[in-house]
Length: 168
Image (cartoon, rainbow, N blue to C red; front, side):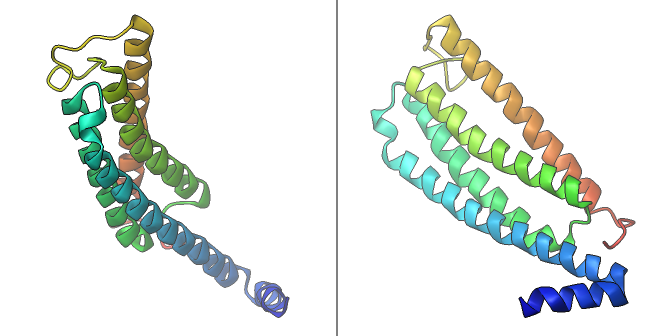
């Protein structure tokens, strides 16, 4: 309670400084969550690799393993630079959600493709495999939505890292 009172007192004295401290606290919370999710997805990728031989399409399972490991590493890298990203509170939240949705979604859709044996949007890893049309459509829609999420998050991160970005 005394921590809240000191924040309120500080806000009354200098609202701009207090809002900056609150935003920095929010930014650090996203950083820690990104690091946690990065390690979690990295571990999921490793476990997917252990189960690779049990999937319908083992080449796609290898891709799912690599997606988990690489996307986990990507989240760790973003978490490491998050304090340098200058975005509004709303843009930070959108970026965070797009990052998590895109990275976990990439692993999940690739894993689903490996389980179902689809070839959707994956001519190399899906070569020789076909699945029901609704399964192919499901995986295609998943890959497209993931692409939109990751590209959006990357563009927002790049925007937040520009040299003229104001400090919040």
